[in-house]
Image (cartoon, rainbow, N blue to C red; front, side, top):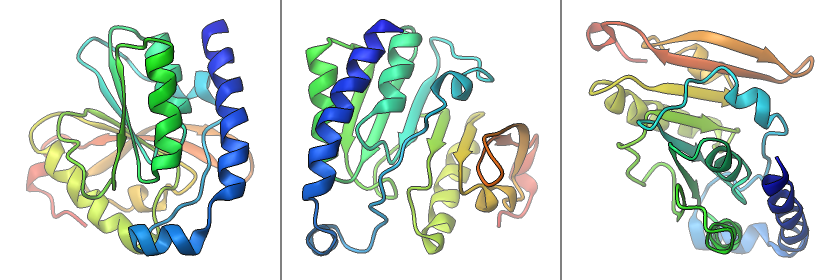
Length: 198
C-alpha cells in the first residue's frame, strides 16, 4: 500500500529522534508508574486478515505509539473507524499530525492513559504489551464491562497470558510469529455474563 509506505517512512524518521530524547525518569514523574515501552506490530497485513472489518467497526489500539496500526487500518478499511490511545504526547502528536496531513477522516489520535480513557464505543481492541503485569486486571475488567453490552474482539500481541486466563474470553485464532511471540484473537464467550470474571 503506497500511501502507508510514505506514512511508515515518516513515522520511522520522527520516532528515531523522539525515542532518543525521551527520559524515563522525567516521563515517570509526569505520568506516574506506566509502561512506556515502544513497540509496534510488524505484521500489519496478517494482523487484520482474520478480522471482519465493517462500517460498524470501531478499532482501538491501546497504547498506539506513533499510530502504525490505526493509520494502516484506516487506509485499508475506509468504512471503519480507527482510534489510537497513547499516553506520551510526543508520540501521539506524530500520529495526529499524519492524520491531518494525509487527511485521514476515519482515524483519531487520543493522548491519554488507556486505563482512564473511555473506550466503550469500541468493538475491536488491539494491544502490543502496553502495561505492567499488575495493570492487566484493571484493563480486563474494563473490557469485560464493555463486553456485557456488545460483542467485542481482543487482539493481543506478545503478552497473551492475561487474556488466556480470563474466564470470559475464548481464543478463536492464533498466529505464530516466532518461537516466543504470537498474535492471539479472543472474543467474549456466549452467555459469559453468568461466568465469574477473573
